[in-house]
Length: 480
Image (cartoon, rainbow, N blue to C red):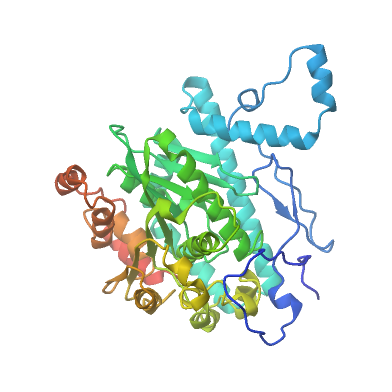
């Protein structure tokens, strides 16, 4: 039986990060990646078109985050009404989207009845997004064929989530109820082009900013995954912008890089309106998000190092790149992922074919002599990784840092003995108290700021969210 997903020709970027060698021919189904999307520009979600042998998919209808009256003001006179009726529908949608983004960015959260309505809309949007991701995951499993590795990992994921549920519940409450969180700010015209902002309570003076790209194996990434990090860093006077992006099969690696770049551009241009310091913006990613963010900043550097490329933000606006548990050389990871259940065929589909592995391997890209000018533009790069990480081995960060140092980039890898892929991002933060990675991150961001460092030194320990025995059990059953 053929693939249930109807592919179309993949759109490649107008430039290439590297000259690519001619790989061996592969079946088109192994790497065809761009999928047909449907849904209006005004719809924050989208759905895939599948063959008729599957159930009919209906586009998920979404209301805008703010009331229609706020996002678009209809003309009141009869003449204006006639004119508006005959205008282009595309202009209408574009105007409303731009207006929605502007109002959503500048208006505080509503209070009273409006606040409850806004909260209800946000819950509805999150539920719709979760439903969409679940549906895509199930269709993806049907497309791949359900193997024992996937079944066991999904069962393990269920147990892992149940054990950490007390922490997830508290973080979710903060995400939906805290006035310090600005949810689903629109930064572009594509599906999933939204970001969340986590703002400090203290508003005295501009704050450092982290533009954060979440992980999720390029398939289940979502901006809310960064809520715990956003909450804890905002408590230390740091603004965090969690950037959402299209996942596979909604998009492939080129789409993810494009979305991340647009999200970074939005942060660079608009963060001052939220009290952020445009001169202290850090780019950070975790797991797959670390890979996407690294590809994004390298692509931007190559654009700036070339001639005639138009850019909407500059690498010089990024004070440092911070990679957490990322992979940066796909040639070393494709077989490793295959053995762990992310099969070679689907991984190559995500990365747009074997011939694109070189383009999306930052460790390989920086070694190309043709990219020497671009590499010289890169900011300092700090890579965090646990030595007991079995999802992406810690050698991925160690080797990338050494390669960067070899081409003249200021880089280092910080390894944490015995820490797994999720220890650094979930278990340790939920444990409360202090943890080394968090303190190292604060020291980097607050370097040179004596007042911030003094506040960090006397800050109370973080609150425990999950009992220790449940954290230990979760660590044992974690599928990551």
